[in-house]
Amino acid sequence: MTTTVKLSHEYPFSAEHVWAVATDLDHLQTVTRGLLEFRDLPSGQIHDGQHIKVQVSLFGKLPYQPYEMTVVTCDQATMSFQSEEVGAGVKSWRHVLTVVPTDTGSRIEEEITIDAGIATRVFATWARFLYRKRHMPRLRILEKRVKSLPQGHVDLTSTQARVPSHNINGFHAHVYFDDTSKDAAADLCEQAAKLFGVDLGRMHMRPIGPHPMPSCQLDCTNEEFSALLPWLLGNRGDLSILCHAKSSDHLADHTRNAFWLGEPQRLDLSLFD
Image 1 (tube, one colour):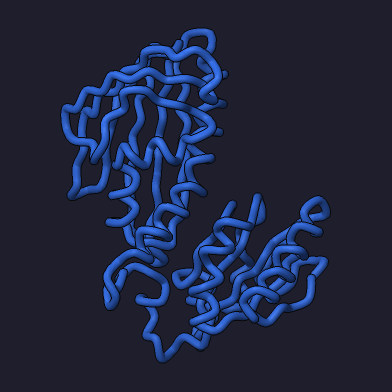
Image 2 (tube, rainbow, N blue to C red; image 1 turned 180 degrees about the vertical axis):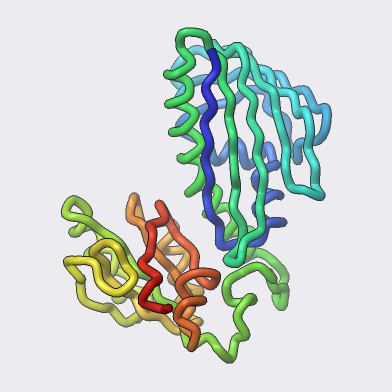
């Protein structure tokens, strides 16, 4: 009995940066911290044919169990790898990861095929949860990585690099909410305005414009947005935020010059036809 789990996550960073982080075993420790704890995990980038034997503990609380991972393929050119894993109650765990360049950065696409006998569905639910939880720590790693680049380095797949700077008049961050997250969204937006001096719009209690949910807009200069973005990454909680450039091309601003923090929503782009 096998089950396949498919996931994808968007990143406002170049495919090369995302690939480097996704294939670094040191970062695996970081993005799974609190969920899985490893012993004997090597350091560095994974590579073709690599066979890794570790001990793994769920939440670092349960007894450590043997677990083995074999890197079947790891292709730098296509930015994809496949691993075969076994242990800790799993008969077979095939993980395929690909990093795909996009207009706003890149996307990680993952497919995990699991055989754990009668417990397969339980492990599939765990896999979906585990890989989703890696997203935010990975974003924070990427933010630190890009900030540490030498002065003058340009990440050509970032939103601002894809739009001529003289056409960017700033950025919007639209914080989405519902009845249960309204207070959290209000607090986040008020703190952003106080800490970074961005212009705070009003709380729209129903969908407006292209936005399918209630939302609040943060209006930023280029400089303000550069400072605001890492703070939003670390403080948004479960809120979804649409970030986009401001230019004369409103359709482009809400598509190829936009990216999401959190769960993406489907915009009503008919307004820009």
